[in-house]
Image (tube, rainbow, N blue to C red):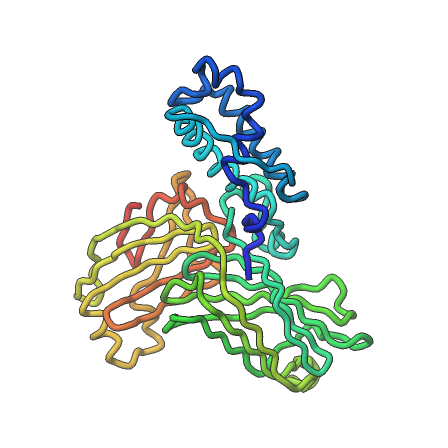
Length: 366
């Protein structure tokens, strides 16, 4: 499954094609060795060339490569300088154009309050899925995802046969999630508010976190037996029996900012190492290691004790302090000597705006 935030490989923009477009305008520059061929382009030249690149990219996305395509050759060092300048501009233009092409589903953008001001922070973090399964007249479709290296939200449509109603308290007997390579995961699934609770459609939002990198991995979702909760009887009522299985390969970009910490924290009189903190617009991930982690995990936990280490607060550079009350959920996982904390936030984070985090009662400056 391809991320529609990228360019189709059959419509990729080649630098030599862009040279062809710019060649006619730059004939004078090429003949007299003027500013275009210098190691550093002027701001005016950069803006003009970038404008041409973006115009050409948009035209290519619609029309494909023109049939009269010919390579343009320039001699010696001048071509190399021009190619280097254009290559740097193309990187920027391709990223900007990919972000422009990707359209967030309105339910995702409303849920996370994605706006023109903050959507640049999410460039590449989304993926259109379009995978569905039908059984007994009921269809479940994975519509769109938003994620980082270890956390993800999946938007799903559920449709029952025409003339039937998808109840507001609809759920499933079981939901199974499997991600290639992940040895520890937590996930939950909620039915989002419906504008028309009397129709045959509904929207699910599944959130998950893992103890390893999930991007570029195969994912499988299995839903078992559609049910709804009856308010009067207090029981789950069978609606549609069956299984629905969705599988695809995750393909989006992790836009997290990673901080190497390498500092100790003392828990229960034992010392462990906070290795790194990763922050994306949707979540924080903390990796901790130490011999005591394995020792702690060898003893059955007391549920009343809570987590061994938790994110007590996130301190922003503007003075704002975020706590668990500002999160959508959190989880921890242990694998041998490794301890991972995931916390998903209610509002989008600016990774550049984080000053420090507090683990238990210890402050770690980022």
